[in-house]
Amino acid sequence: MDRLAIDGGMPVRAEKIYYGRQWIDEEDVKAVSEVLTSDFVTCGPKVVELERALAEYTGAGYAVAVSNGTAALHCACMAAGIGPGDEVITTPLTFAASANCALYCGARPVFADVDLKTYNIDPTSIESHITEKTKAVAAVDFTGQAVKMKEIREICDKHGLILIEDAAHSIGTKYKGKPVGSLADMTCFSFHPVKTITSGEGGAVTTNDKELYKRLVLAHTHGITHEEGQMEGAPHEGPWYYEQVSLGYNYRMTDFQAALLLSQLKKLDRFAERRKEIVKRYNEAFRGLPEIILQEEIPESDTCRHLYIIRLDLEKLACTRRQFFDAMAAENVQCQIHYVPVYWFPYYQNLGYKKGLCPDAEEVYKGIVSIPLYPGMTEQDVEDVIHAVTKVIENYRR
Image (cartoon, rainbow, N blue to C red; front, side):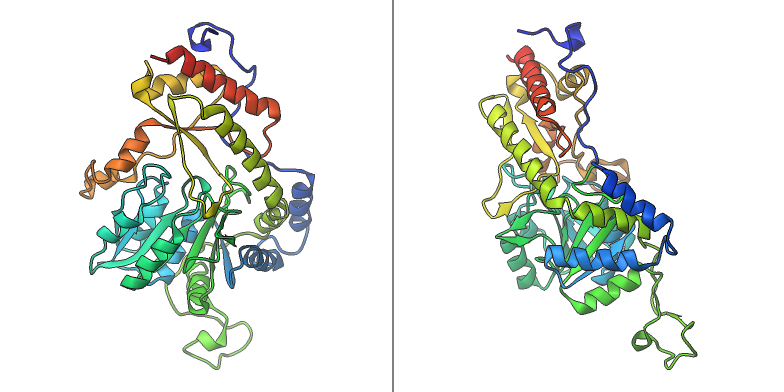
């Protein structure tokens, strides 16, 4: 058995590899450079071009590009008419923005539990948390796997709820052959650098509903319109005239960000295919290790995985998760944890939320570790990660 690097042995790798990384090539640099030397660096034609491309790729009727994924969720809540006294059901196993977006609008997040096998929000738990105050469900495609959309859609239709899909992880994923982005009332994307495609920071909301689209446009541009049909003071004075007809925010994306994302979008299918190859290799390597529980996938989801999570069966290991994490780092494989249950944070505790709300999510959280997954990984990188995981497991095996 190889001695662990943390105990003085030789690390698996000479250089550190991280759990996620963007892939920027010369085409991307050229696309951004062309915009930076053009007449428009913001509020120009590239954003419009991007919105059309996103709508086409996802099969949605409309797309609105925004400054980040959090802004996308906030705009979706605003477009849904969510406000004080309302409740929005979401998962605790997510980034804080999936719940914070309800708070931004004065509403209350309600946490439904997850499925112990897929780690996605459990439709049965959603329905058990519906009250007369429930206005929407924000369902998160955790790690990139699509939620059980059919079941959740039926629940939302039954109770008259807006369905917001938080697809920050799942661009490129398909559910029953249809792209994520065309299935929910509104779908929110994130284009942070660790996501499958990036614009540095950036986000988008897609929808098939024209009225929701109009509200999304207003929400991300200060509530200001140049469209005469939306003005109360029409006919207006001239082409310079505009009106603020609602309260909105400056959540616009710049043209150079849009140019980068347009260039990345052309490579999305290739990126997704490479991610699938790595996931397949990891599954093959780890399936025989009893100390690791693998995330299961529903057959309806053709998943472009953003994260690869191993779940440690700590009863079979003579270490804590922290010791495993540190041992992996010493092997020069830097892992991450996704995510601390949202309602565990002090801010939420101060709002009255208590630990124990979602026992299955908390059980999953105890053992999860995200290992490197991104399309720029070489075959040697992948094998190094497998070697490191196996080495650490073997050293800590009971």
